[in-house]
Image (cartoon, rainbow, N blue to C red):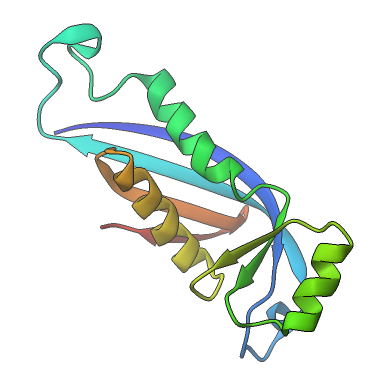
Length: 139
């Protein structure tokens, strides 16, 4: 079994709907994302012969997904009133609407799914919301 790992990070704000604690309030994180690839065999031909995947291609794919979340307000669909959304957008805030509660666990899964859709053999995504707290998703 062969594997690769790369990391990326992004800054964003979020809040947790229907949560009773500090995280129900708008707050931000410097999220750290670690992505692992795994493959039984190395590629046998072409420019990636002897590789799982070219590190440059791997890093670009991860950063493309992660950068789509950078410096945005991550919002669970339906969690804000239309008037609030309109007010935020009229002020020029960048909102990213996601179809799930914006927990580290759900973000790890979403990032994994985005990368798998690009054809990457993802076996694990770690999503750190603080230097000491990490959620892991394994497909």
